[in-house]
Image 1: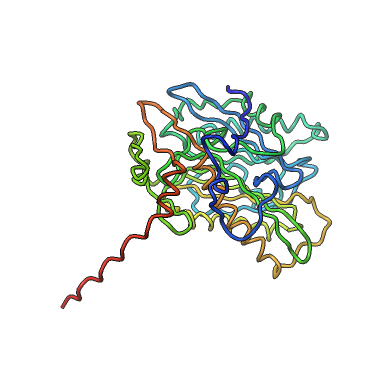
Image 2: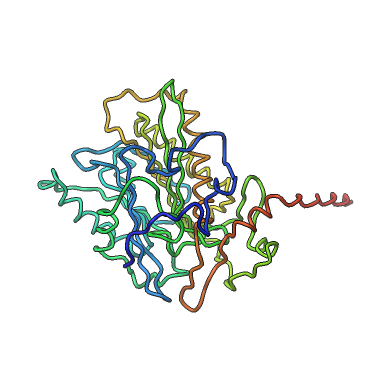
Length: 367
């Protein structure tokens, strides 16, 4: 188990989208441009590496004081249900979140859920709890990691939960994103946030993604493929593109007063946003979003007619978080020497500034 991941520096070798001048949408980010900009939300990672076979981990999104006695309003949306989102039926039925949201590798999800239950039962106020709904999402990292080894264990889960903190969030090949691949490139964990006004009040929406889905990357409307690496004089990493399978888990947090129905609407927009990035939504992809509010109840919900700025913020934030997950990722060599290309900043900028390809002439009519 590696020590807790620390955020990469903006002036390091891997930079975020805004460091490159790539701005998604009109809204302003929070101070860390991360899900932790939402007050009371912390993130923890445990990265599990045993090269060359294992590149996996667990990521915890931890709202303060969440528990079965103090649930938070929440919603969930399934874009394509080929996945193992543990806890989704009760989340849908009751519209409440009772635990942190954990993300991990597909076959480790069940061990992670069990470890989360054990951790929760030890929390203050849970000494007599007899029912608990753990929420654990997953992505299949089997291309770059020995997924059958189920390498994520209870101590990894507890380290992520106990080490969760506010402030900057490590991205890329950390935690649950260590072995994931998206849109033909090495991906991982990404995050972003937006501040916005709803009905004259200021709120924050934060997003965290575990990106591992198929499709063709689009940035600011321009298609970017691994072949663009050659425009910057780079070779590919020698790995074959991953098949059009995978998943994307999205977690949205907000301090806006919303009820469960409204948070379900927010979760829908989060999955819709993947289309902007070029997602294929293929048969084998599990595309899910969980959205929760940090206000336990009591405040009147924002009127539905006023939710437009929040929807826009989530659409933009998910798009930026996916791009951040790609830009932060670094080379991983998995079993059998398998690799996938990383997304170099210089190649991306070259692709974005290149003249658009000429339009093909229309085909002659057939008779």
